[in-house]
Length: 328
Image (tube, rainbow, N blue to C red; front, side, top):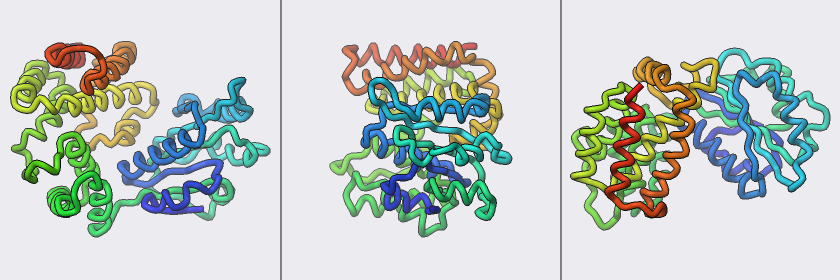
């Protein structure tokens, strides 16, 4: 069965054994994956395994090993990343595994950057019998407005309408930029405050300037941005943690993929930033980045007042993280 990303909620609860998420719109791909994972975690799936290209040869083995569950009765989401090119036989053969339709302890989630698929091919027809196929196409102008407004349900109807018009007018055709704006609003918006203008001169954009300076390995400039944010709007702390976490997770994923450029595109990195990100990843090894993921988790707790450290200590840790990331 095939549906678009906007219809996923309607069809997700149909006992599908697999999901195939594809299309050119990375924001819709990522949000579809999030919906699928959330749905299954709520249904009792407690484990998740991720398979990248280097492990494709072991796909069938991993599926069969997890199909029987564990001693503790756990169920597993198996997420497979396909970063472009022809779908390999290791993936198409998944739907030939005997009795796969009876494997209740696993669900298979295939995510691909393919922009389209040939529905007449044998493997797609076979997949269609077992899987929900989610197509994440570029949105038309009126569809963008519907999508943005649906993401702004945390604010009043009046303000949601105003912000929808502003965001879609400023970033028409760029769902990644629209999504970034929405993430900022989720962290900073209050119905009690007047609706502020959105624009590059706003303090709201400083965190994304920070991302640029970190991947450029510009320590001094990055620290000045942190200092400015702390001085003027220290409630942006959680957003800084989000940005730093995004950089680290993107770098780790890039290290773990053979096709690094495709990995960066899959993470929603703009084409213009890919060369800078590639240079950043090259200068920051996987061995260095892995412990930083744990540190980001600790900073996230601290930003919410759950880690038992003072506000000054939190900002010092942010500085330390920036220095670590921008020093090879």
